[in-house]
Length: 271
Image (cartoon, rainbow, N blue to C red; front, side, top):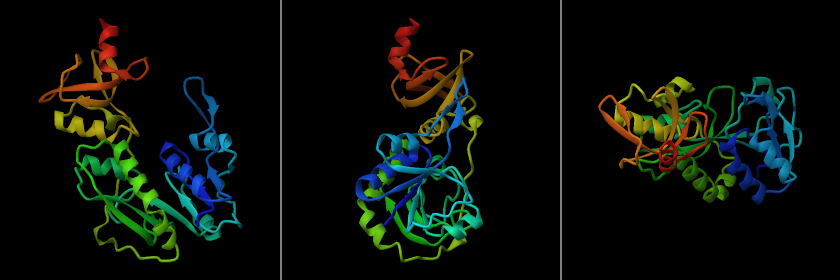
C-alpha cells in the first residue's frame, strides 16, 4: 500500500483525493509556496491547500530528507527531479506516467500524443530510478481513446482507469518488469510560443487547442489582442479567426484582460 504521496499541481489532485479516501496514515510531500501573479504574492500550490483543508500531514520536499517510515510512495505530476542520493535513501517511489512506456517519455506525454494523433494511448506505473522514466514497470494499461478528445478528457480517463485498477496495482507493487527501450521516444517541455496558432492551418490549430487545454491554453493574436482559446466548435458563434487555410470558431475563450467566458457572452459584451 502507498503511505506517501508526491505531487505539486492540479494534475496530482485527483490521485491525492483518491488515496486520501482509500488509505490510512497518508503523508504528502509537495513543493514550497512560490511568488506568483502580478503582485508576486507567496501562494501555496493546490496540493498543500487540499492537505491543509483536509487535515492531511504534509512536508515540503528536500533532496536531503530520508523518509524512514515510507513503505511505498505514489508520485504524480511532481515538479522536482529526485537526485540519485535521494533515491538511494528513498527507493520505493512509483511514478504514474501517462503514456505506454517506453514511448513518450518526458514532461508532456498527453499533449504530445494528441499532437501526434496517437490512437494507442494509456498509462504506466514504474519504480523511479536515476534515468528519465526508465525504471522497472509494475503496471501498464491501454485505454479507449477518441482522437477528438481534449487533454483534460484524456487526463480524466486515465485517472478513472487508475482508480478502477487500484487493487491490481497494489498487488503488483512487488512485481517488476524491466522496460525494453528499443522503441523509446521522448517528449519536450512546451513553452508559450508553442501555444500560438496564428501561423497554423485549421487542423493544426484545432489539435493544439485540444492538446494544450490543461498546460496552455492555445492562443491567437486577433485585432492586436491576445485571446486564449479553451474550446472550439464547427459552428460560427460570432467570433471567427482567420488562419492559413480557413477559419476556426472558438466557443470558450479568455479575452485579454478579462475572465474566461463563453464566446456568446463575449460577443454580447463587444456589441
